[in-house]
Length: 83
Image 1 (cartoon, one colour):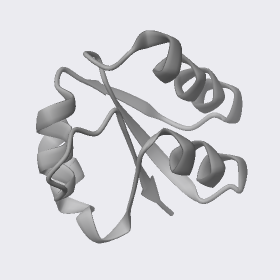
Image 2 (cartoon, helix red, strand yellow):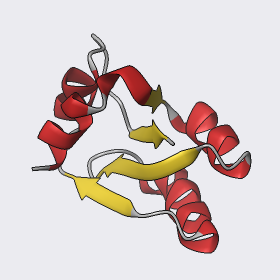
Image 3 (cartoon, helix red, strand yellow):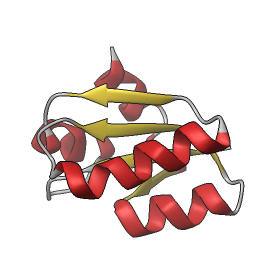
Image 4 (cartoon, one colour):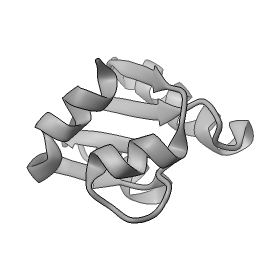
């Protein structure tokens, strides 16, 4: 279900760790998707910030599938949906 949701919001996505964190801090994010096969020490920062800010956080199993669902040719460790 989560990959389909990412595809559905393709026009409103923020892709990547740094961009996701910045948008979260600026209050621009309604939901975050994190790939479980990404490096934990990096994705944990996004997960912690999402929890701190009360932003729903969904886990998916694959960076490759998350990137494809987001419409990019590279793997994506995190994807955020803009409000």
